[in-house]
Length: 138
Image (tube, rainbow, N blue to C red; front, side, top):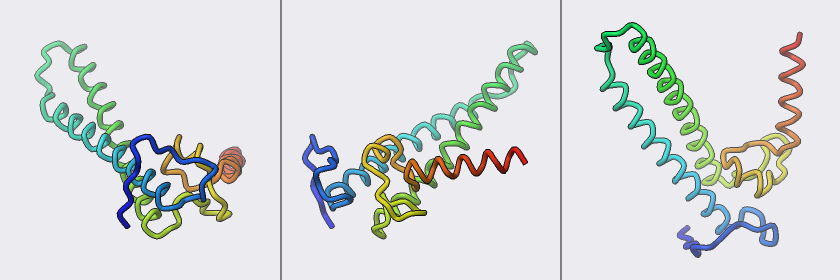
């Protein structure tokens, strides 16, 4: 499948859901996002390798440690997002992308634009969150 998208293409409710063009649009969107995350992750890694404990002042050292912890959390978040992006790419390949894991209903273009790794419709997501809250309160 080799689909060329016009530069101004945006998915629309008027076209068939998850047609070739739409799938290609989201595939490119996911690839761009993955590339940005990898770039940021590489920058974080370089900062972590540069920074050491050469700060003479204890407050500077504490500040450097806090920055380092934040960079590690950011890197971990990026790693998790990249694996979700990879899973979304597999769903594009197998034809299940854009459809709710629970109901099989279309997730919706606006939701996918905002969160291209979404696996649930808004309704299913809200149900999940309600279930999590009730189980946490037990």
